[in-house]
Image (cartoon, rainbow, N blue to C red):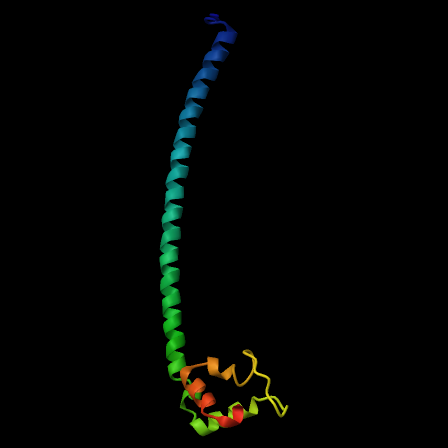
Amino acid sequence: MNFGNSPLGVEINEARIALQRDGEELLNIDSVVDSLQAEIEAIHMRMAIQQEKRRAVEARILENRARISPVRFLPTEILQQIFKSCLPNDRYVVPHILSAPLLLCQICRRWRDIALATPELW
């Protein structure tokens, strides 16, 4: 069909030009979106690295706080008294991992050694 210079032909030609222009604009938009997506992924990677660094620093902070914790410097005899006061009032202790004395053995090596060396706990 050849509409030439008729009003319908002009309209079809304008529509084709508009489709061409809009197709090119869509390609440009897609390119920008792809570029932004790549930037977002790069930012996510940088964030993950920083979060890992943060976790490492937080772990060091916790470790150093633990190193200067006053409970670390309590004499063994005081800890033994505290451990004994953690026992239930029953004459016989039913061992359970979530209660004294077994729970005390899970805190740290020093507490485990003290608990195991305290016959009144067993």
